[in-house]
Image 1 (tube, rainbow, N blue to C red):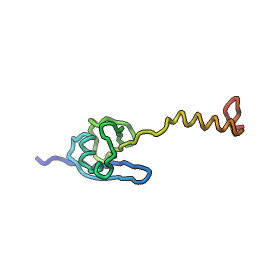
Image 2: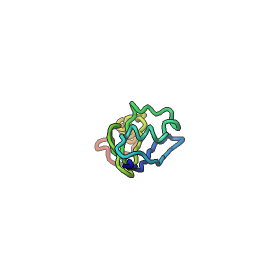
Image 3: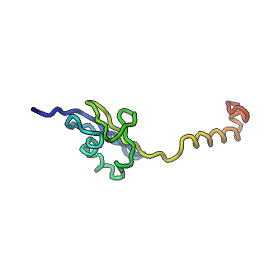
Image 4: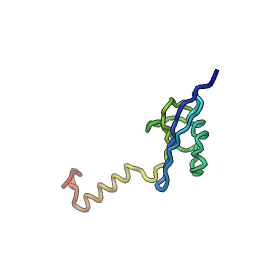
Length: 108
């Protein structure tokens, strides 16, 4: 009996370089096994698979999950800044510049 193969994509990007690799693997492999067999780690040696967050089609998943045929596995970089803190600073700056109402925070 021949093992069935599935087609997957692995995506990763930095501000300077992006990669989207399409390849075939045996059905039943885990996300981690698929990433290792894709060869993307040789293109991006800075990826720490043990600490990096991963997802399938923009939904977080575990490296032990099993992808389906046609899935895109994404490797995420860590956030540089806290999005809530960035938004708070931007709102304070808008109030100081008079672009936002100091009481309600809405547009002036």
